[in-house]
Structure formats: C-alpha cells, structure tokens
Length: 473
Image (cartoon, rainbow, N blue to C red; front, top):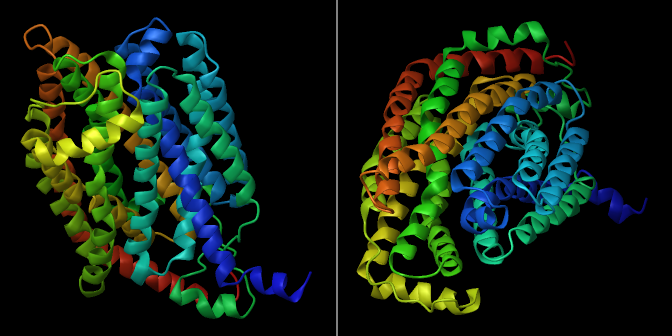
C-alpha cells in the first residue's frame, strides 16, 4: 500500500466518500419505492389491472420493508453492518430488475415483495451507520441531509417513472436496479466507522485504540421502551405515516387534474409527474429545520420534539389548500415529449395563478413537515445507546410502515368510494384531505416527548461517559 493510499484509508476524504456513497444508496431505495405509484396509469394498462390493485402493491412493499427492517436493525446492532448493507442492496436491486421484466400483475407483485425484503436493510442498518458518523451537536443537520436524500430519491424515482414510464413501465424499474448494483459495489470501498465513533464521551476510548464492544441482546429489547421518549417516537410514527402514506397519491391527483383538462393519459402522466417533482421543493427546508433543531437542542433538551410537533401541526392547513386548488387553464402540448413539456410546465408556474398557488402551498406544507424527520432521527440517536439505535429505528420503521401502508392502501378505496358522489379529481382531493387528520395525534405525542426527552438524554449521556472512561465492558 502506498503512502497516498494509506493516508486515504480512514482519513477525512475516505469518510466524506463514505457519506456520499451512503446517501446515494439511501436515496435509491426511496426511488425504488416511488417508481410504481408515479406510473399507475400506464402500468395498469400494460398489465391489464387497476390502479387500486397497484396501490395494494405499493402498500405491500411499504409493509414488507417495515416488517423486515426490525430484523435487519437488530442484526445490524449485533454484527457487520457493511456486509448487511451490501447484500440488502443487491436483494432489492434484483427485485426491481425482475419487476421490470414482469408480464403480469402476479409477477410484478412477487418481485416487488422481493425488492421490499432488501429495502429494510437500508432503512435501519443505514440509520445506525450514519448516526455513528455524526456528533450530537450536528446530528440534526446531518440527519437532514440523510432524510433529504431519501426525499430526493423519491423525487428522482417519481420523475423517472412519470417520464420514461409514461409509455413503458419496465425501463424505470430496471434503471433503478442497475444504479443500485453500481452503488452497492462502490459501498465496498467505504470506511466502516466503529460504533459510537462520534460520541464525545467515547472519544478517549477510541483514541486509545480500544473498541466499543457493547452489543444488543434480545432480552434488552423490551427495556428500550422504559425510555418513554422511545414509546412516544414510535407511536407517533403510526398516525403521522397514515397521513404521509396518503401523500404518495399526490402525483395521481394532479395527473387526474390534467386529464380533466382534456389531455391524453401519457401527457397527463408526464405533466402530473413534473408538477409532483416541482411541488416537492419545499422538502429542501429540512436542512434549515435540522440546523434549527441543533441550535434549539443545545439550549433546551426538549427542543427537537417541540420543533417536530410544530412542523406536523402547521402543515395541515397548507396541505388542504393544496389538494383543493383547481388546475384550470393549464396549457401544454398534448402528446409532447418530456423535453418539450419541461419548459411549458415551468412557464405555467409563473403565468398560471392556479399552478403558482399550488406550488406555493405545497412548498409551505412541506417546509413544515420537513422539520419532522431530521429532528426525529436525531432524537432517536440522542436517547439511545449506539448498540440500540438500529433496533429502535427498526421498530419505529415497522410502526411507520404499518401506518404508511395503511394510508397508502386506504386512500385509493376511499377515493373510489367517494367517486359515487364526487367526480375525479375532486374525489381524490377529498380523500387525501381526510387523511391529514392523522397528523393531529402525532403532534400531540411529540408534545408528550418534550416532557420525557430531557431526562432520557441525560441518562444516556451518563452511561456513555461511564463506558468511555474504560477500555471495555
């Protein structure tokens, strides 16, 4: 090994490279989930099925990902996380590739489930890894980039599907699969941080060359919820994710709004997808929210929970306005290519008041909800020991998945039932609006977490300080 290569391994550049590769991997798994919902119409036509059936597929993917994430998280807290992430990525990439080769609804369903089995690894094992790279004082900001990467991944998947999948549903699924394999191979070149690597209380232990040897045991899992903050964080995820799960159908709502204007299915799919991509720009505010969370948390140990509560509750009125705004007077070229439609949609943003208003309200709604994920992720790390974080996140991810799959799976049937008295797209707007009520109990549970998190953080820091003063258990 040369001097240059030796200085790279484990050095600052190697760690930055690791974070970049990992963030891309985290974004790709969300891209994989977002593909099918963004091309419901052409996929339903190609496989001779219904939008409701494809909604069931998406809900199943979310649920299976959540169910398997608990096992992945626990396994990651006990063993080699790098190996688990590599093989987990290969599993979901194979599932995505075979989904693109499906010629029937049954085949698509089967291979999407295979894809979901691997996706659980990225969600939970990945969270454990990234939390070890970041010190508590910058945890919210770092987690905002990690969470934002997932949002960008979902945006990329939805964009790719709505454009390349408007006439061929197979291509987006297989493109995502190839990218997954490429970055799985790149992940083999990354740096594997020791557990608790960025914890100030463990710095002396790591500098001495000792290893943080604590690992989770099965009998420790029930005790994790003796920390009441964990209980509130997990429970709020169910109700909040019912609302979040329904939002997967926003592209479909706007595709229907374009259809209502007289455009064909392919054009409506493309334009709805482009609008959906633009409407997610508000998620960029998560960087600011994570930074604010760090600043507030430094003065108030209940700060992260307070910011998350305000974010969820503040988003509701803006989502309601966004759903019900009409899309009147939109002017694009029917049957045009994506290259033609992009500037036309961009022009609509500044010349069509309805499109402009939809953009503004969506940006405000997502700016509020963007406060949730970075502060939630950081708070889980703040109140849990390094060997427990993957498992707790996996349990939260399980409950989140149950809520998200419920919201995703029920939005379609509710909108379909409403179609008896409300014509599309109004039935979809009403259906989506009904699901936003689930943000309210989530906000209340975050408020409960403001009462418990200070004591739980102090207890966690005390344990780490005691362990950091010696070279092993």
